[in-house]
Image (cartoon, rainbow, N blue to C red; front, top):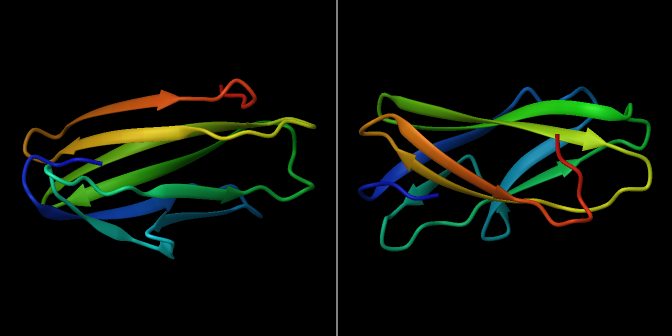
Length: 114
């Protein structure tokens, strides 16, 4: 996550499906915000635990970032499939001055995405 100037960015995971758990981690700890510095952007990991009895098919959740009067949301669709394991890496650039956002996502071949 990057910002145009050093600032705190509040983070949250929303719309988590019932029975699932999702948390943001930074430096090995559960976090609800980061200090975003354009010279040294922080790394945050989204960890999602899907229950074994979760219905197959797409499920949605969202990650939000807010600072000052600006807020941006990254909607995510995760597909539950039998016997599939994998992960995804997300990189976000957050610009509260213009309220614009750019998200890029790369998914390993073993993961599925909607």
